[in-house]
Length: 327
Image 1: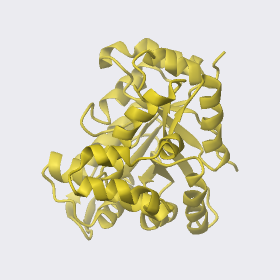
Image 2: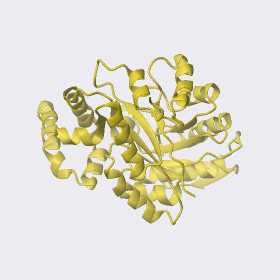
Image 3: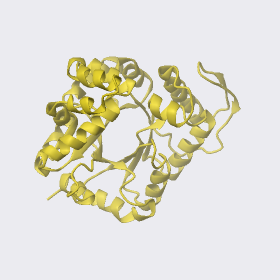
């Protein structure tokens, strides 16, 4: 069985949460099948999805991602079970390590042994969602006698956010899919090869956040895009990821300038070609064609993130212009 292609959008949508009902319904009419929440410094991962569960039953809901560190295991399991109970059969939980910035600097939680932490949270969620009382020692925490009081009708699939080979192999072996981020359509092949090799012949969903700005003003997009790239690709986990992808030589000037405290120099060291690889821009038709390349190379589900790099471009007009059913 081949997994269906699922065009998705990143949530929450622009504007206050209470204003999203009509936009969620329009997403479906535009051809989107999914919304995937993120959790960093804005809305939490679950609230926008809970509202969407009630407002728009045609959408599948997913988290991309919930950090493994920032909720206790029992609280994590309760949140997952509650949303799965609210939207039976149309919720997927995505778990990831996040980054040292979000976990350690913003949440005051030590960012240690990320591979083991993600693995243990995924294993605990499997155990807890199975309905039995959990008394078990995992490598990074221990549970004594926890049993979920909420039993969803359908157990949600669990996906792991992965960058390099270790976490990709874990996702292939122990999860129902993988969530990937900040890579080009061409990079997808390298990631999917690892998944396919270690999945034991089983199909795995591949969810990818894709950054899009349907603007023909390339200079504006590249100027703003450099700030986004510098903000992410200097974070150690993303730097290591792009080194693994083969961009070490291209990114070394930026990394060196950043480490030296030269922020302007770091931005200037990011070539146009890198912005063009990682951020889709151009005419709406060109953007739709580039999005399709992600599917062609092995992505099964997209989570489009609309980037506000051109002030003259209205967000919702941009969404409509790159939608699967765009006219």
